[in-house]
Amino acid sequence: MPKQYINPPGLSRSAYYTRILSITRPSRLIYIAGQVPSDERAKPVHVGDIRAQYIAVLDALTVQLEAAGATWDDVAFRRVYAIDVPAFVERCVRDDTVPVPWARERPSPSTLIGVTALANPDFLIELEIAAVIAD
Image (cartoon, rainbow, N blue to C red):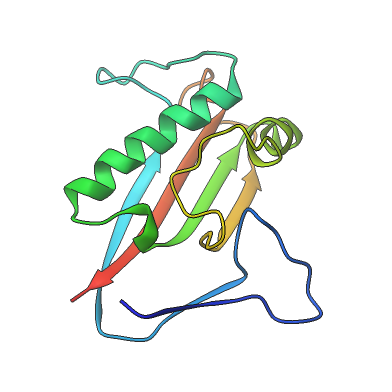
């Protein structure tokens, strides 16, 4: 599906997100609810380790994308909720050893939001995504 990744001149650039993603053809939208770092029984995993929790969340979202017939290349937007924003930025965003499932040269737009609590006090992070695939 044709997509245009746009980072307008005069604005800062990031390797973690693109400022604008324009979809130019008819498509199907996929919204995936916030994913927390939990196992199949909804129990927290990797308690106290935001990096490991982030990777677990990305893995769970990969499963959900595949179930919907999509991939990370189809993700049009990511929204991250973090209990500790500086820790997330340092251990997940700036750490190039964190495996990301999307193409680093074409990251989707993303918003990072600091929150005071998530559904379980052991959850340090939650991600929700939207994807677009050809209709």
